[in-house]
Amino acid sequence: MADQLPRSQDGPLDRALAILTFVAEQKKALSAAEIATALALPLPTAHRLIGNLEGRGLVQKALGTKRYVVGSALVTLSAKTIGAAFRTVRRNAVLSAVADRIGEQCEIGIVRDNVVAYVDSVQSKQQQGLQFNPGAAAPLHCTSTGKIYMSRLPAKVRHRLAHSLPLVRHTPTTIADPETLLVQLDIIRRRGWAKTNEEYVLGVVGCAVPIVSPDGDLIACLGVSVPSARVGFAGLDAFIGPLQEAAKLLSDTILQDAEESSNSQFSE
Picture 1 (tube, one colour):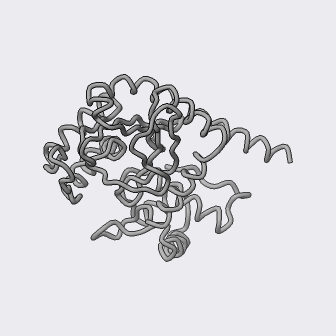
Picture 2 (tube, helix red, strand yellow):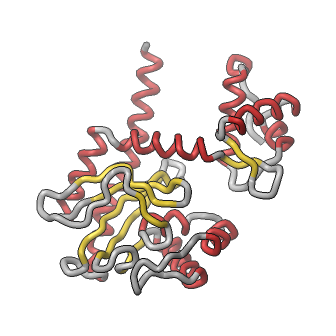
């Protein structure tokens, strides 16, 4: 059960934010009664606040139920927030360093509305290659970032998503069968990173690693896509270590920025 809000943080906005936070932290859809009980809110108050949040698209009913999950507007806002957070001088320096180290363009991608959205990229000074620029989008099932995202979902959600996505065959090597995709996702879940073998664009291979929060939650993915004529599918393995080191640094900068922001607020 969530802690009851302190009296000094018990205004309507505090309660609404508490509801959003609680719903976002759960791995299942919640009834209004469950939300009210967890946050020690009167049920009529919970219904009123949830209704307001639903009207703004910040929460929504799970398909075919009266239970609530995060809404599309909140997903879009969080994606924009993550994108803005990564476009800082400190994180851009990390991205530039790893791009120069491996000699390829590196990009940061997140998942929004069941597609991969790229929020930042840095081109290596050494090579010209495939570019996923900020704002570009790509499918889940045939990109390394998409596969990492899917692999980290709970088993039932992962299975349902694999069977509901339009598994369009973009190239001869695109995995378009849900069961085959699920087998690969199990492998990716165990090893913690993903590769793709000319699955989205013919002649292009790629790999990605997760960028996680201090609690281990997936924030984004750091990846690279290169012509297979220059770096074969097997050659991608050499990029994993440098990408993982950079992903750890990127995760650390998020924590550092949060701590610095908190300290500056207290010093005002």
